[in-house]
Image (cartoon, rainbow, N blue to C red; front, side, top):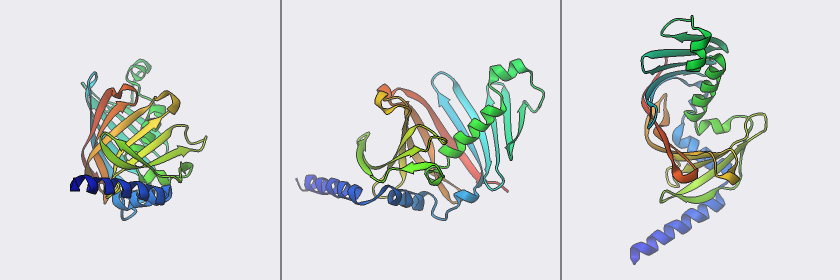
Length: 239
């Protein structure tokens, strides 16, 4: 019985704290956990990411991000080919197995294009730059912090939207109420339809002084259908 009352008191404290803390305050606490030295804005790093999915096997992607130089490169290895997509101050270079000579048919079949390179730059910079990317211009942080139970655990939840020219999805970020570590994020294209996905985050790897989730398991919001798992195998600072 004593443990029950301790548990009840903890839940009351979490609820009270969620009502007291603002969205921006919660974000600052999360940033203090993940990026205590404010290193993201000068981030220069390389990360090896392996994706496993039920229908597509394993894909290995090496990402290089140099934010001060506006440089991005992805090297994707899958099956028997290697695709390199490089954006250097938006100058785009594409290679297949080391060659820049790629037929239009092959480009179409393997989805090799500068537009896709830019999309992947935004994708990896956003997801692996969270929660720091929530400080970007155009992000709308809901001032009200919610308390939610997700997969049996209590979280402080931050809601974020975007100005029309930036994006249209609605995002929720789930933070541990004690450490402020980001452990789940979730997005909806149309929340009334329960579309979109949620991503379970586990383990941490430190790159350039930033704590980045190591494992990301992706699921559809609707019916909890499993999609894939990304594993950040290793990361290092770029010279």
